[in-house]
Amino acid sequence: MLDFLYYPVSFVMRAWHELFALVLGPASGVAWALSVVFLVLTVRALLVRSVWTRMRAARLTRALGPQLTVLREKHGKDARRLAEETAALHRRHGSSPMKGMGTMFLQVPVFIALLHVLRSFNRPGLSFAENAAIANYAFPPDQVASFLQARLFGVPLSAFLRMPAEQLASFGGAPVGSGAPAALIVPLAVLAAVATHLSMRFAQGGVDVSAQPAGMGQVMSALKWIAPVGVLAAGLLFPVPVALLLYWLTGSVATLAQQVVLTRILDRRPAPVVVPPPAPRARAPKPGQKPVRASRS
Image (cartoon, rainbow, N blue to C red):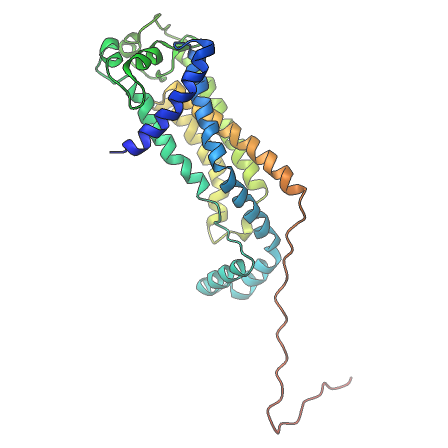
């Protein structure tokens, strides 16, 4: 149903694996782990322009803060008028509080596709030989067998924390120790959660929360705590494989690094100039009407 997502994601991952396999060997767990890492870096590289647009828009929104405060004081009791005036202000300056926000959601299809591809390497109910005989989208059967045999610190890349012992035993290669998955998965989940929080905290550091649409500021403030808890809970409670935790961790670290670099570039540029709206003109007297002069004290 979503083959249009599964095939491109698996193809990019396969291309990186074949490159690293030339040096490390096709069954190397490090080569497979690096293929996931560089899949993330490929996605981040494709999104760098959109991230730049979002960060510039955030800076302009912050520069509009004083005028947005005036609008809230003037139309605070009329939500519809406030929304209209806020949108008009942003349009006049070529900005938008939501500009570039789609970059955060563009990664969701990649995440869903990678989760499906990784879980398709080791289908439940099938033996190692049966799984190794089935192609997994862009991966031919021999590469499926290579992935199943690959280990990272002794743990299969398709393993998850609560994987049944009989399913763990179905992997090819050396047997997996009873404590090995937890020794790798728990630190990965914690690191991924911490990196998620830091990247979101840094991203929101340059955003004027009060300048966001009604309710959006509170959502943004809460999200930097809710998202890391979700990552940690998913890694510890749900069938999230080791390779996907690597994807989460790499994605958060790459996002943080990208934001730091782009922020430094923006800091070297002149701040956006925001011209205040012109003051309303005094009304001219009607024809035949005597002009009213200000009384002297």
